[in-house]
Image (cartoon, rainbow, N blue to C red; front, side, top):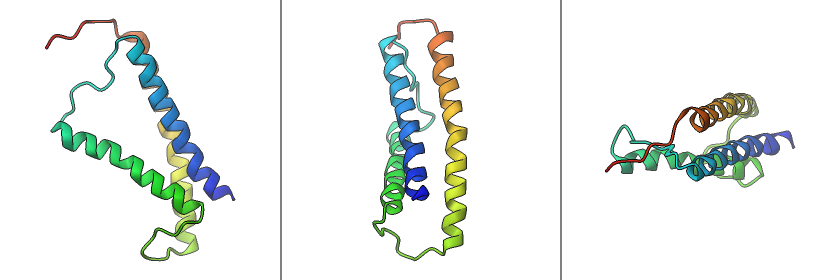
Length: 112
């Protein structure tokens, strides 16, 4: 029971923080996206493709078999530890990024 909760909770918290922080910054007229470093289409496809992977992992953890090859229990355990261990590293980084942008960037109108 810990696996489905762990696999589901951290992406949900991260997405709440990202979209909630983004909405807060947009209300202050701060553009948090900026210019992508590569072609916009490739950048955004890659950026949002992770949501599909996270969704597949959540669905798999709740018992729907999506894998083509059965994974041994020890490998699932390692992946669970890495996944649960990695998201707490993302959460404070995102909170610091949103907090820094929200307080340190003065409103400047964009010129096009």
